[in-house]
Image (cartoon, helix red, strand yellow):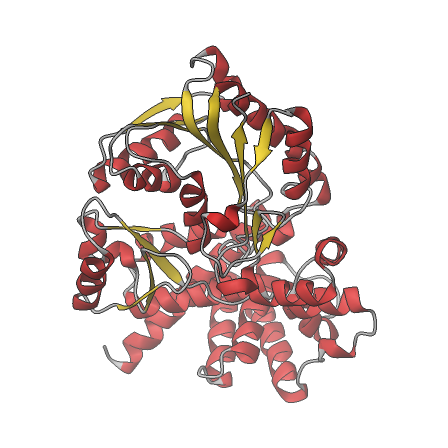
Length: 450
């Protein structure tokens, strides 16, 4: 590719990143879905995909910090797309040393001309050159701890206060900082098709930098490439899944021949993991509310060659009307939640959520757990999991469930999960800073036989 062609492509990438940023800010669109769609639409090569991902996620992750940097240089109101262009440009100036300052400014000015007019281009040019000339303010100068942490890590103040009350200031700072780090891609080996060594060899042959997970047996960490493009993925030897997300199925302790229910199953990562741990012998019923999401479960099962999975579309809070009471050996309730454990992968979550959103979730979670209780046999095990770090949705919901159903007893997950994890009263709480995985909560309960 010539120098001029490279410049043209980089321009397209920045313009594509700007389009995503505008849609996320204006329409509350999901950044991860837009990014995937844009990569397909622009038919970008691996280098440009990486740049687009970095520009998009980096600008969203640091949005509040970027606004703090820009504040002294902006006079009056600017259009939404112009503010996004300035954020995108300052992100490159401050965080990406490999891109020359003049290239950032020139590209921003060209985009401003194409999308606006010469006046806007002149304003963008002036602001960015002032940023380069004068530098940006250091958030460490902010005296108030909550405001300082909020600005420096780009998390809303209500979230910083909430986490500080639940985990303390030190853990909160570490968690907010970890949320701004790029995620490591991990895959789970399908043991019905091969071993971890088989998967490692296949991935390395395809040019991936692959190493066994130090946290979860049978998991592999990958750097340098998208595992979805590997032969191992296409042949059903691996599934892309975060290490934290693998832990609920392990905690379920399902065995071959059992009857298992996954109540909130789409897109099927945990469902298929359960079937694999059962050596695809037994029955795994997977339900979700939306038909198009149930189809994803079926597609995943087909790719992995799993035959023990049956799917259904239903509101899982009303499954007792369709399924026989006390008929399941194991039940997984991977409940709807605030998603505050996956901010690293979906950075727009931290701006779109509010405390009001969290307040209504425990009722839904308890409703699902109550339904699961009626479907679980005596002696059976129920696992409750969420991809959030919020204690109200996690520890408090688990505690309320035990109060409502005295015939349930909490199990100690330290006995079944890897030992290098964070356990509290036998329940698992993963924070993003623990080992680089998603924030996750897992609790397990057994139905008494007396």
